[in-house]
Image (cartoon, rainbow, N blue to C red):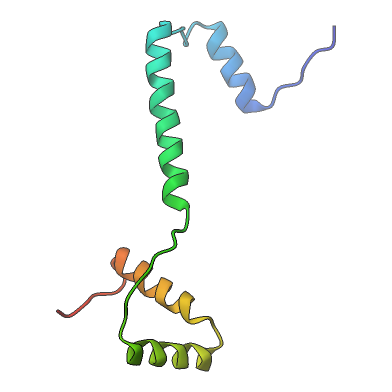
Length: 96
């Protein structure tokens, strides 16, 4: 039989199991916990997706944004996305 070489972290886990520091959980508790983690993972990936939206803006504003975007060499959609992201993450404040 070939002996498996464990790294430090894996060896700590093996030792903890051998010392009885871990115990099994009832099947119902495991299923409940698993469902919580699956939902969290699903929500994480859903949040990280991009979403297409339809947005009405004044033509004058759009022309200005496009012109400024052209001036710095990036797509105007990226500027609009950066503005939305900055506002959503409290890096941009609006004076209303």
